[in-house]
Length: 376
Image (tube, rainbow, N blue to C red):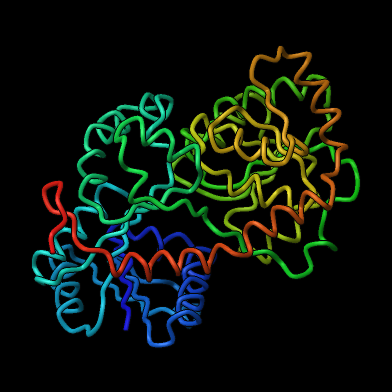
């Protein structure tokens, strides 16, 4: 029997909306197919808004930090069979896993999931927070039994910090839920609009996005700016758009479920992906599925994606002057990504839930790493 516990001490799963809970529920379903007696738990400090979404997972919510560790320790001690602790990041979540392992006295391996390109110099230099985190990541990676990266390039960058980290690593991107009617919802005509989809945070390249929109508005006065998502810098984003005369051209959709988002892709001329450090490019892939091309700034994840698709559907703005950017937008806003490209992306993402479940099964059987040696 396998018990997988995702340690969500920051509440990123339970507080990030419908799509994230549904995605983890799909992981639980895939795990049960491979191991019928398995169970997937989400141990979180926040309650999920709609418990009915969790059909294949059990969500345990405890608000206080003390209660979180007490309940988590009780859970680990009560379980029979193998246990794997899954950390969503190599910092707070990883150290929470270590504490749970100590207080429960259960020999549970830890899988650390890394979503950011933490090995790249660009990521480290983004802000003071990243600089501090970069100094502690070596400890987490050294003592984790298994490390999950989301792209090959991300793993390559990590190996520059820890040369042997690849021996304990798997590369599995974040899955995308593909609408069964995706082919009918693809972009079919030119549209003078640019969209940004995802978390509204300055680290996602919002300042560059605003600069590009200002450039485009000069040549395209009917430009529409579509914003899907929310985040801590939403008010700053809106006020800056207003100051630059762009807010009246903008539509804020808020957070959309995958189903609702699938209905609006075809209204986008292109999707912007300007984050200077992008390890995978989940939104870019989803955009390509629905026929919408991507305007991007170079990052490890998007360059890897562009190369895998022979750059069909992704254009990079690095080094272009304002005139070139306007001319390129004229081409891209009328471009429709070939259906064969969409199918290539779908083929890749359809197998990911199973790959994640397999990594958990493998991870649950790993001996513990202790002071650089295997503890048997």
